[in-house]
Length: 327
Image (cartoon, rainbow, N blue to C red; front, side, top):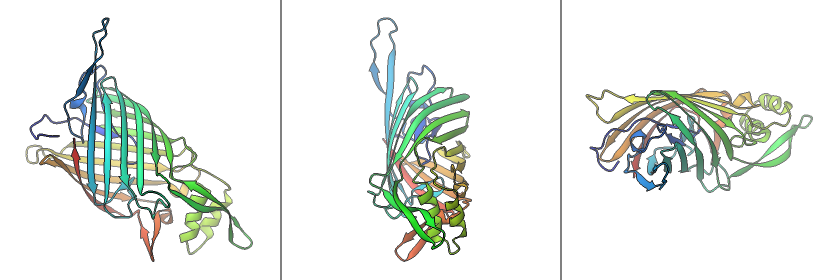
């Protein structure tokens, strides 16, 4: 938002795991999408005339760009930046017909997404319909890419000698089918993983990680005993809400609530819930955000990272501060 006196914006909610893919709600047949955005600037709509002698229709579209600086980058409560500061760029396209698209680039840790460029790229597209103040829904496709990032891990283990075998290379890329449904300020979404793995979760990525960080190898051996598995069919579910916080005392302040659940296909070790409470205050043309995040992960070793001589635990509770500028 370029000026603080513009009208307040309506709700917007995210499409992917990353808290990342934001899809704006659009009234069916709406001409201007500007008033239906939240969490991003309400920019003047860039209108293009679709000269139609029969209908005389006007096609309206809008681009929103946001730069965000964060004390750390988290996805589903797990740190992607190894508890270090990060930055994010988002570009969103919204059309009055209900079509939406988003490109997002965020900084991630090379210790977590090894051999990569230190970037996480999310691309999404879909269609939204309904009334933002009542029932509304959406469907879409999304992909999350980590350029160059890949790891090597054993996909088997010799039970007689305890020696890892069948070492393979896996990347962290994921593809999703997405469905959203909401009523008023309560909005839900389900992401279904259609790629072979979700963020590299296969036998090597899961069982190998447990084997690496466990003193007792029993859990890892039980994991390997299930045979070769991938994580296609993983389900990520989210429930979100945001509402004005004491508007008479704290104008331009929003309370955000989130609860999510990850059901990792074929690997119950990766099932967990996450919760988030956040506050956003808009001042001086900036969005000031403070979020508390927590998870109840099942196998903590899946979220441990070797950082030099230290082991960092990326699934701990966190208080995350961020500043966003939208233009």
